[in-house]
Structures are given as C-alpha cells and as structure tokens.
Length: 295
Image: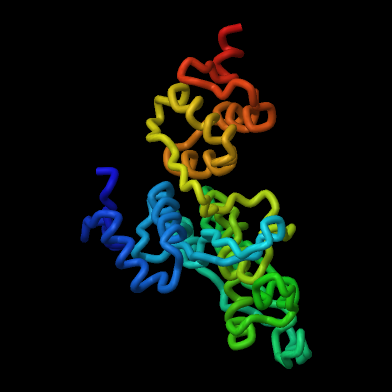
C-alpha cells in the first residue's frame, strides 16, 4: 500500500516490520535523524522508496549545505559510504578493500585552528572481473581538498568539529568512497555525505550532481508503471514547467526505481530545454520520441 513502508531485515531480505509513514517518521525523527526537519525526513523516505533501500539502515544522510543563490542553508540527501559498501558487496564481485595508506603528517593553522592532518590518503578497492581476474581500483584524496569547513554564509576556512577531531578517519572515508565509485560505477556517482559536508550547493564539486532537494511545494511524482511512460510524460512535463521538479530530479527518482531508456531520458531533458511556456502539456500531449516514430 502507498501509505505503508516495509522495513526489511538485511539478512535474507525477510520482512521484519511494516509501519505506515507517520510511524516511520516518528522512529526516524527520534533515533536516526534527531533534530532534522520533517520535510527532510520525508525526502529520506522518498529517496529510499525510489532506490529500494531500507531507511532503518540509514543508507543516506541529511546534509545541510549553503545555497549561495537563495542565501540560506538547504538540506540535501546524500548517500553514506556504507551504502556504497553494501552495493559493492551485493554485486557478488567485491574482493575487499585495503587499509588506508596515509601521507606525511602536516601541522598547520587552518582558519585559526591548529590541526595535524595527513597530506593525503590512498585506498584500494578490489573487484573480481568477468574473466576471473581481480582488478584493483585506487583512489588518492588530499585532506586540504576534502575537509569540511564550518558551514553557513560566513565562509569560514576552519575545519568543522568532526574533521578537527577525526582528520584521518574522515579523509579515509572520502578516499574509500572514491575507490568504490571507480570499482563499481553502476552503484552510483553521487558524492557521499562526508565529501559534501560543509560545502556550498554552488561548489564545482557538486555541479551536475543530482541531489534530492527539499522543495517547499513537496510536489509528488505521479505513480509510475514501467509500461506507462507516455501516460506519465505529460505529468512530468507539467511539474517541470511549473518549476516544481527538474528533469534530473525525475530521471533520478523514476530511473533508479524502474529504469528509463536513453530515448525516454532525452525526451524529458528535451522538454526542460525547450518548454512551450504558453501551453503546458495535457493528457493528450504526444511525447517527442513518439512524434519522431510517427513521422
């Protein structure tokens, strides 16, 4: 049922608990995401539904970032490194990960805080290829290029509390996430919460990255069936035309759940690039890819 969320045990995927969304909201607010806004937790639930994830496993994090255009903080939903580990393990091709290798220690005054940090960290993820060969995918990340600053509009360059307390652990997670993305690109390309923490939504680090945004309108995508693209395409165009969703929002939420062909993705993006503002498509709207087939 649409108003219920099935929470499954990780072992064997056996249904362990079913609760409605209000009950799940209460649990998530009180335990996994204390202090988070209800709208942000709803976005977590929506993200998990679309991706087939168990929200009780906390596969994603709510990350506050500074939105330079809106001049305010905005919550975005980002995966955790644990999600990439889980997806790699489920592939059946995960062959392990190395212990993190750290570069020389650097002691420096960074934004008024004297901190000792590793210059870089290297992690190697191993994947068993179709041929049976075990390939290694290495990632080296530099602390100064990744550390999270104290957030907000003040533009501080000082590391935040977590990166001050755990300079080695935090950069190790960033290096491992990068190595996992290189070894298992099918698992996703979005940066993790650790990589995004303290950054601006306008930073080049996240340009082109699909992030789950908390929209004031909280517009819901129409129900989707894999065989009903043409029926739902006008509704998606309506959301795009009204500024409630972007093409990438729809492709991420729908494509992750059931998959979209390249032609279908291009049809959604083409409408966003060239919308007919005087005539928002209705139920009789013919999608671009279908128009081409009819010619």
